[in-house]
Image (tube, rainbow, N blue to C red):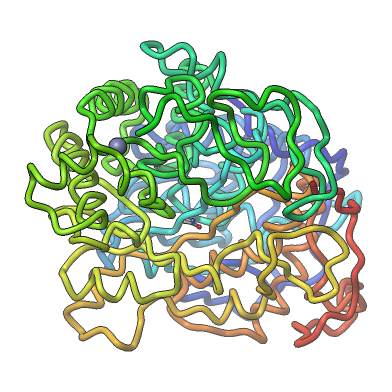
Length: 569
Ligand code: ACM
Ligand code: ZN
């Protein structure tokens, strides 16, 4: 399938100068002192010298077709110099994803240590293509590059629970991840406000849990309720299609099924999962409600809710194991994310089943009950060969033996987990929550927080507090996009860019170079335009967008300009 990113009607283009502008910055870029260039034209051939490289050629061809309206022939041999050779080689630096490439008078040569490396080399080739519209040829400067990533885990998350995004946008999101040489897509699929994954054994999860009768208007607690029946879900066929689409881009999709908290939507369909099936769903009195408010309901506002999965009843675990069976059949990922965050213990404290569990299992308190819950699920996942990931609350009451921790409430959870020799993904809100405002002058509704571009760029995922040995447990970091106030694709893109681009460099490149990044970002902005992608100009010196202008990151907001006005809920 084609990448579905790109619809800009673009003519043939040419670069104005020979300087390459790559993000993330490669380990080594050498440019000979020559004005000579490789001309990519419809007669250029992609030569697959290694096996199973068709994916790489297909992505390149789809990109060329959709941006430049060129499609290249693919062959297994060629003696011409007008060729892009894709090959395997043992790399000096044995890091997954390593590649090297040369562009010279013999053509383009890309070699990776495996398919992924070749794919990343091809992404670099894409960034060597010119970004300005002219009628001339596609010229690529001569260059020699060696490259490999700093971190093994370079992730992006998307919350499809608060707001639902169609498969077409999920694929676009995956393309964005690929174009930034990132390799994990964390798909947040269940929430209080909507359950988004078809589970055949539990049809009410999509008949009932996937829909809410309204949504608060504006920032919490809201100025009313829009009264709009809202929702959606992904069928299992759609999920298989997305997973396959991602795999062709060397991206692993990690599903997140929230438990024991953030489970109001599931409980609305199957009240027996609650400690108190007969108690109606509570919602904050200051938030306007739409429609029926008797019985269990899918939430219509944002926050943390007390009605969570009962940890005392075995029927809860039967349900979750059945759900996870279907999830594991759809997602080959070694990692399965079970949430674990923001689970109030108030119901557990007055639930006879939960109290009995605490007694029977000799647990000290409700925190240990949460730990029991997570460890029981971990045992199940491990028995199927999978590894559990949870938000850092899973440390409370004792960490499950093999769990990986996503540290979101700052870095302390990640540091504690690394001390305990557990793998960690850093995703601290103040550095990588891309749903935070990127300008203090934000004229739309956001969740709050302030995360300008330069702060994302300055992020260092490996805490200095760790010993040299513990540092190896930090596998990488991830940008999160929570969608309480991100109701459509254009706002999602606006929040992503350019901050996701900064994060890609944090995760790939060992050396920080903020002045260089700011300069290279100006070319990247032109790529956003080629992709027809929305982005924020809050951190860009707008004068710098002119080809001859100076380019810099600004330390304060200079503009509130953006292409799409926010209409946030
Ligand atoms: C989270 O932001 N509640 C993980
Ligand atoms: Zn209970």
